[in-house]
Amino acid sequence: MTIKHLKIALIYELRSAYKELGYSDADCARLEVGEAAEHIAAVLEKLGHEVILIPDIHSLIKRLASGEGDTWDIAFNTTEGLHGSAREGQVPALLEAYQIPFTFSDAATMALCLGKGRTKVSRFRFQHLTPAVSLDLFLTPTTKSQLSLDEIQSMICRSRHSETLLSQYPLFAKPLAEGSSKGIVASNKIKGTGDLCRVINSLRASSPSSLGVLVETYLPGREFTVGILGTGKDAWVVGAVEFTTEKSKSTGDWAGEADEVKVSRDDPEADLACKTALRAWNGLRCRDGGRVDIRMDDSSGTPVAHVMEINPLAGLLPHWSQLPVIAEHNDVSFEELIGHMLNSALKRRRDGVSV
Image (cartoon, rainbow, N blue to C red; front, side, top):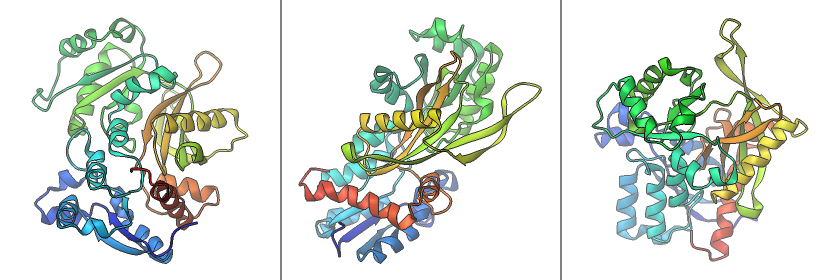
């Protein structure tokens, strides 16, 4: 049961606050999770809590330095960060330093999940939850804007997977450090050597803050996103949706905008996706609520589930973001969703566990 009359610091990112601080439209382009702040605040107040609104990291730092954080019972963190490959871990790290309990994953998990390459190498590959063949192309901001085919192939050849990658088309490329499936589109499929330059240079141009590109085996099967609530042994799957598109008759590729269709656990592939997602969630020690994207490989005739992305800081805009929509599909209201997340975080606080 939720402890009543908590003082909760709701930490979010208000675009206008960052614009006033001198940030550009490009800097603020990714700030989406904070759009739900007013809805989250309304729910927390309805649950009987006092909400302190903190609309940017600079305000948070000032309040922490003044000692105000000592008066908060818990922080509700929704910040994505603006700079760096560990940006989603910056606010959690500050809260950890000041020993303030907070919702969602800790700084280490946030940073790890944002870097897809590190996530796959550190956990998923050893659990057989990710494509066996993948390659990180780490490209620094000083790298020239357009890479030649020779330069790209030279980078690939430095990988221990180079021979397999260059002989196992099709491949798929995505930004190395972006959340919420940003930069992942059907045109990222690499059918052969001729597509390498087009896809990789296009990705680098569209996601300059990502610093790199991940190239991996293309998985031809169904794709799901799975909503999860809770932490550790208390984590559970709230539901899942499948991304469906039609195949082009001329190319055989998926084409057009993907529709999100609710799926039942009675569907064996959907059930496998949910079980795999929960395993990945707990494997990275994610907390309180988020999403896991799963793609099937059905090339052998027996579907195998692979983790494509884990999102420990999912969007929370009611009736719009995927996690609240999945919850609604499964009779969990937005108020209940926020309540579940808060209660999950409060278990750590009541148990005296460091968060």
